[in-house]
Image (cartoon, rainbow, N blue to C red; front, side, top):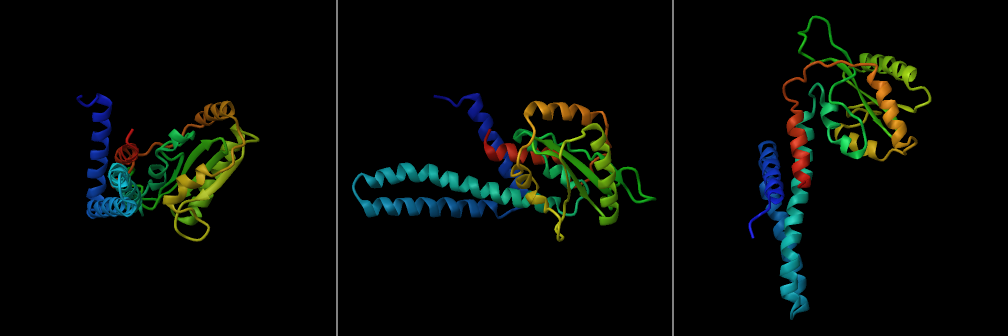
Length: 240
């Protein structure tokens, strides 16, 4: 029986994801192979130790388990490579939030507020302070990046704006980064998903409409941050 279009599409996504990851992490193929071989050898060894039909059973189980181990390694190294590529890039917070929509969050790629240094080009966000917004059942999360003083000022100003249109909704203020008290880029998604929900889905939809009335900044994302690739990688790694 020939492959269905759905299966062909899934294999193509995995292939594209692997190619994208390999461009950032050339060693990913070697680590995937090691993970697959170790997994298969361990399972086969258990089958040989048990003897009899368990050997065949170990082969049947070992092959898909080896493929799963390789995929897990690709996923983890892909995430590490992706976050490494985003490190230090303006707009990295928005790129890191991509995919949160599938987890029940409204998280636009574009910042809702930007404070760029004077004298720079319009499309140059290097050194700019930015605020990104995520909305979910835990409430509104405002995440700033950039120079500390300007980022905090921008964060407070945006907090006042959302409080006016969404009174009573919890507002959480974060700063992305690797310094003390900040949230590392690679941990943003996990921290959002672990937050305790306080709003219903219907309430979130209402709040989202109110937040849209605020408008927002839509500057071009700088070179080095490729949101299309980020989305492709994550979709391909899940094989959907």
